[in-house]
Every structure is written in structure tokens, then in C-alpha cells.
Amino acid sequence: MPSRVEKIEQILKNLQTETPDVEGAVLLSMDGLPMASVLSADITEDDVAAIAAALLGMGERAVNNLNK
Image 1 (cartoon, helix red, strand yellow):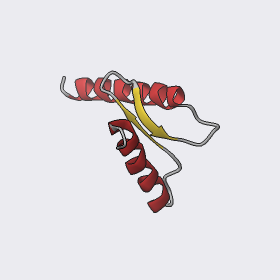
Image 2 (tube, rainbow, N blue to C red):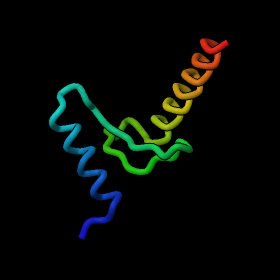
Image 3 (tube, rainbow, N blue to C red):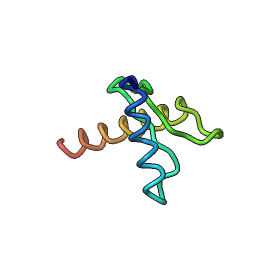
Image 4 (spheres, one colour):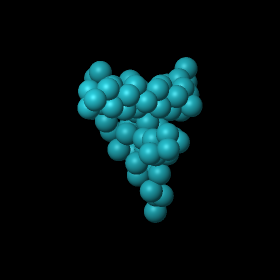
């Protein structure tokens, strides 16, 4: 029986193969830690996690500035 992570990775693989513009996918925890991924060899989970964390931080700052 596949583990939970293996099931999620299969879903990500399906997303990647069924959507032409998707080159890879990563599922991150709320803490920004990679939980499962399907990426090409030249991209690491850590790279995507760092980019996602930066985007989240910018989004939070934007929302805070708009609420002032």
C-alpha cells in the first residue's frame, strides 16, 4: 500500500503530465518545508521552498500595507 507521500507525489505527477504548462510541482507545509515534489533534476525542493517563502512574505506585507 502506498504511503501518504507517495499518493501525493502521484497526484503531483498527474498534474505535471496532464497540464502542459506545469513543469514541476511541490507541496509545502505551512512552515515552508517540502512534503512531496515532482521536479526536474535542475530544480531542488529547497529552491522552490525559498521562492515560495519569499512570495508569501511579500504577499503578507502587501496585505498589511493595503489594510493601513
